[in-house]
Length: 301
Image (cartoon, rainbow, N blue to C red; front, side, top):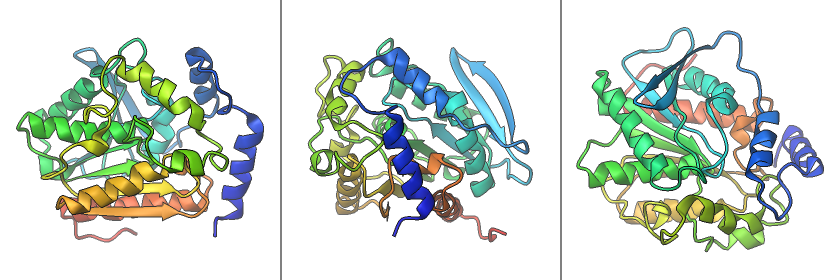
């Protein structure tokens, strides 16, 4: 059963109308996402910099191990979001994983359609390795479109013959831009965060003339063999639920270790809401996964 906090937040999101409607106004949607931004905790340290035109941020907390790291790709339908909108979440991830987080401000659509985001994700991963972090000490993570981008990045690394990271964490990932999942219809009335009718129009702004079933934009349909372990978290009230359940099924069928966590009555990327009990549980699970795949034996306090 969902917590009272989860249900109250879902009701508030529905009543706000911020994520409802059938029209796509990119500028307004960007403002709405900014209005939902939670402040970063005082004990979290953030340093911004730019490498080869890609804005990045290094987020850390006391007690992290500098010999490993989390590469984070924010969500927002490939056209919203920034380092600022996701700094609070990245701070909690740094704490949960006891590892610094490298946030990536990849280029957004519609100004920069596919494959710009994938190129920036791969380049940022390359930067971590160039700085001396071993691939088996790196986990790539992302939410929503950032989750899909995480998987697309893994496929790109595989195609380029580059080493895979230790693992990947996908929060409510958007992995199927064809919109073929049944949950896009069965959960349409339940999801307070994503308008099902906007999925395909939003996808079009990102993919342009690319086939929506191309694994570069819909990694659900890619060859997943050889990918590292995956941790997939999703709520069962999401229109994107099937983007996660089908991914887990396909990954396991192709020999990839995939852990699927479905949170009862949870909405899209609930982990971004710091006051929810489910959010704390989800991040604790991410911390344990991070330790397992990077070979850390020490226990969390």
